[in-house]
Length: 251
Image 1 (tube, rainbow, N blue to C red):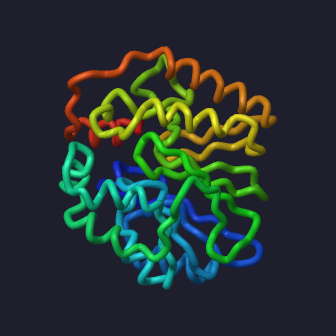
Image 2 (cartoon, rainbow, N blue to C red):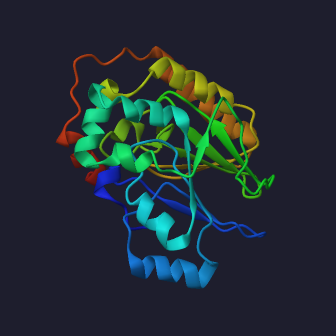
């Protein structure tokens, strides 16, 4: 969709147009009335906004109000937010003043381990529980296009690390203090092996497209093995460096 928001670390927002109607957004850009009008005129707007996790939400309430869309978020994200404590919440509260209260007002709160459909019950979309980066992180699988939207669960590396350019990876180097549970995130990666998607559209970094689902599985197995081999990064404080990396093409 463009219009990336600094308050979402420059994360990529997506719009999915469905044949049967009920279009949905995956995460949010900064609100722009001109963009919203173009989306409404060209595609009929959006019925749902799937928020993959707490920190890439940008102007979600403005988009929801404009389209009359239902926002979808896992309740575990709200549990983390309502605590109003810890590194992650304090850090994101600085970026999104009042974000705790704003997220409490989402219309659809997912519970349990899923998977879930969108509220209209269509079988073309599957929302997958992928905790790790945050406690209630989800990915979104659009079956007709064989695309998985990963939010911050998986990212595509940019030019800051040329030795890993174009590879999948987890956002750990600069976010270890605010990641909920790295071991859980790796376990959630393993759940994706064998699923019938061949394209990964991450919240940060390049799209990854594969000729076959088995090639996608090989890529996932590679990143799983690599992440399991990595030491935990200690004593790294989240800072403005994260935003600097956003605009340097890494995140």
